[in-house]
Length: 137
Image 1 (cartoon, rainbow, N blue to C red):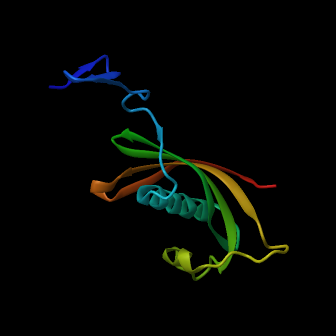
Image 2: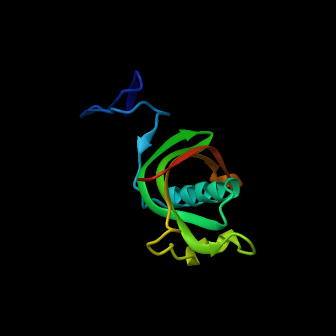
Image 3: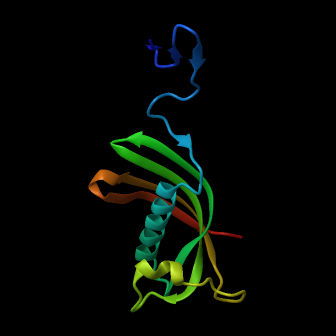
């Protein structure tokens, strides 16, 4: 028999376990998680659609990922996006995985970005609700 007291302690007749997170609050998740990777790509597409750069950018590093259970999942992500050799014009973003990063030189550029991506997988819905990016040093 299980009992829930104050949303913080899940008890049975034999033992009681304390939980440090509150239901519905964000929690850290692996940067290799399938949902995280999809959300990061969606954030990169949003970035590419908002910039006037001639080249596409793609994720070069995922620094941190959190997930929150809302009406679906909200992913809060810290991501580095780096310029690729693929031109935006005439290029399908679905092919982003095939784009190589710019070699060292004048065209190489990386942005550090904070994204929030909301998804309802059962509806095949995904939306970038927030992002802010700044050039990396």
